[in-house]
Image (tube, rainbow, N blue to C red; front, side, top):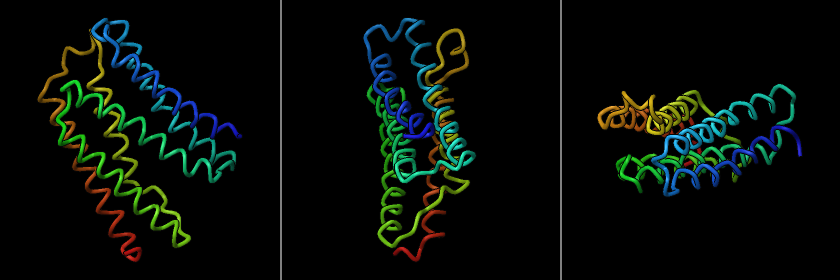
Length: 179
């Protein structure tokens, strides 16, 4: 197993640790909130690192093509679901964002069945960035949480939703031959 794939696996392994600390009883403790933020940020940064290394070192593998986007979806969807469970994010937004992930994954599967690989498009990368910004914003611990507000979460969530929908539409238009 090459280094980029090991980094992808690290991201997958960080998800249970992130959820454990996020959903644990003393979540309100400032130390625990910092641990949660650091775990999420480290996991999110590994996404950029593994992809960069795979391309730079010419270590792109089928495992990486499959697991990298899956690891991203697991990380982001886990956080979104946990936020909804704790009333930090509206359930309908979480469902819409996850539905987009399933939809694009379905398109990728259709493409694979036709011997094609759907490369990540710019709007999908922007979607990932907006999701990570939204999640980090919600996770900000004291003293950084002084500007976190319900309206701020809602605005970031709607921006994330709009970018997500746009990227799904762009994938559909660019790959209409799959239908």
